[in-house]
Image (cartoon, rainbow, N blue to C red):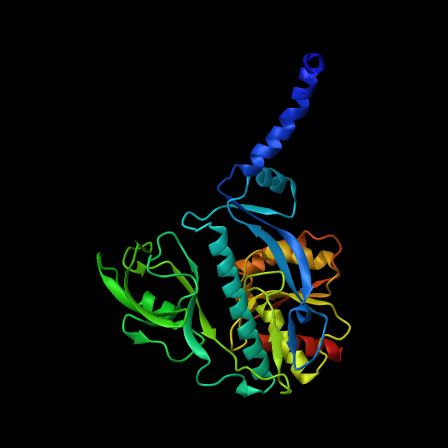
Length: 358
């Protein structure tokens, strides 16, 4: 064996070097995030509304990784559809916390889509006086107050109680109206694991002009739909499926509306789209839309809905979500898919109704 090794050690070393490089580079982390195309999913795989199994409505997901390995970085640079960006300086890259954050965002998107779809179908009993819980924390950063945790539900802040849900995020509004004072603390009340907790938190950073405190707390309005038993014609059930995050919300709301009304808006069309949704049916921006357009195209979609904040073309063409989607669409080869901007569930319904009439 030793003789054999002596005779072929150079050859063995040549073979071992790439293997060692792959092993080592897969463990060495770099300060970059990777986003790449993934797949589309029928919304009905993860939701059942009124015992219906409507199809043709699809959400789309991407692969998204923070603080990737050096090997992933190299492979990503070779993928023409992947995007590599520097990791946000203050981002918490703990896998467990990131996963928990994604689950919370997915749960909020499901609840919002159920409420928006039911209310659009005229079933207003989907909410009651207890539906709005407050503002749930879905993301924290390295400079965020240590007293708070992802999943906390904020019920009051700086002596302002949050009792009703509005289209505007009232917690963010209160924060934006404050003036920065060094050393000042602000009272906050949260629900954590069913218990009401009170803290005094301070700002860890200020915005660019130095006058407004920044707390590093990202929230969603948290509304819980009324639960119907399985014998109720409006019964629903859902699960998390194989993806996390909020971006399926808009397509989920379309599926909910179709299932409740039995109105086949999507008949004959493969519908894919993305975007968050609030309980009022308004769309919100999401990440990874460049890759989502590619994924939808490769899946044979007929229509891809892009979330915008306004249906005024002069306004939405300036929005980063639309610009990224359009740039991705422009480099597709012979796309049959149409790229359609929408600002709400109503816009989707109106567009699909116009297509049916043609």
